[in-house]
Image (cartoon, rainbow, N blue to C red; front, side):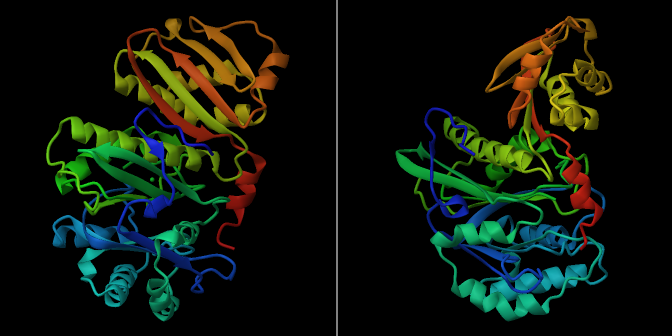
Length: 414
């Protein structure tokens, strides 16, 4: 998928290793019965990083999240490495925290750093004990293979039902220095973030204080990952973390201002593009859906309406069937809880095949069903909603609901 960028930002190679000083690796350790699939990954920085993270708001939280929170508190918002496994979420297990802490100890041992400088994450089946032996027996190989060129292997290691790896990186300028920010993500099902089974790891060589890094991440997540929905289920293990090692040499961003806005935009572009990739690769999905809600009295109204449409199972099914059913879209807006005047809503559907107005002033209008079918047959569809009540706007991303989604989730554990 081609990255969507803005002036002043260029696409960069290297994913989570695009930034200077970062290396990564991934391999098969035996958690996944398929020997062709990586199931253990690592990210490492030459220098200590300022760190920030956001986590799932699900009250049932994976042990890795609990341990990562403790580690970042102990290290006062710093970290140097990430250790992550797939196939097993290490959640709802009596020994979960013990296993997560052991993973940090193992990574720290081979990297010669402190255990509290390690971020740990897991994804996969919930409620099954995590076998630690495969990780113990492969941790040295994992560390020995660390390289900036091995970012793809790390991206593959976090995949579960994902059909493609997800990476994005950009370069930009701060204080005359070229900075890079890149990341990798996983997620295909159980995605309805509230902070997203989405794991996301971002690195940058820009110098940013922990406080401003956390502020930027918390703000950007609200308009990217929290505007994503595949199936309405919020995972127990969702996590987004950012590591900044300052190796680009810019003056540290310690307060709001022009430099902070440049950095924040870079973070937005990477997370927004990863969000689009996650939506497009939803379990069983055949179409990426983007809902743009404009003309709202405020951002909260716009985002509430857009997320409701994207999260609607009936809208998802209609898009799968190429059915321009504006009634389902209006229905989703109506129960969203947003305060609005329904009689002023316009709805337009568009894709590479053109655009078509299907609703004006809150009422469905006549249109060519043939034209609608052509527009909705594409793999990227935009649902444009105008509330005509203000200047605020928001975008949400999702996918269609297909027969394959049920097939995948009917036997997920096997």
